[in-house]
Length: 320
Image (cartoon, rainbow, N blue to C red):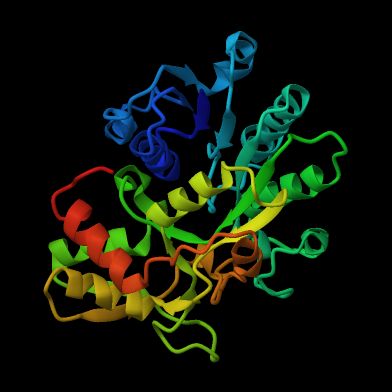
């Protein structure tokens, strides 16, 4: 059996569904299932059992023949400032999962984040020695980097383990994320409501309005990489997970209009004050390590990913 935490969430539910499509129906889904508004994400997923997030460690000992744990559950709100909350749900919870996997020799794949890179002062290379130098811009990023540093210090490890630094993931099953949903999601919603899209204005002279750049990766590609890593053929460690190509927010919004067969109508508003000092103007994953590990499948281009997402999921409110 395979345990997937965060299975009611965006990435977790897509990964669980992808596991189904690959023939894995012996899944244990872990999350806070009291949040009914996320139920459509997992209602169709074939699984053996659902376990509430805070009950997992009480029940792990009774589960047999665990093939792997894919730990994608976390507090992901980048505007949250409660460090104790992040320590409890992200750092210490993940340490418990790591220790269980190490003791019982169970492979582990867990979610790190490109938020660990901060402003990119040290670049976007997934080299282990850089982790202690990184300066995340928010408590969420710090919690992820704190775990990465801790994991690298451990002598006792799972037989195979991979920490994935997700860059800007977008795609189906993010209806519940509201403010934290992708800009594509918000663009589609704004177009339906107003006929246009307002992007954040640049507050740095080096970037024109709309030319802030991120590495956007389609969630289906994230699932493909996780299924590849489950084979255990890559070296243990931390891996970037983006496309390796940064694109502008203008490109992103314009392609959303085009996927809806509309001409772009884009304007700008000031970046909210609570985000302005913590806003990444450029991210781009160095993907050499994952490619060297043998993952050769091409990533969806921004045009391909947006077209699929908008036309097959957002327009008809479908789930993956």
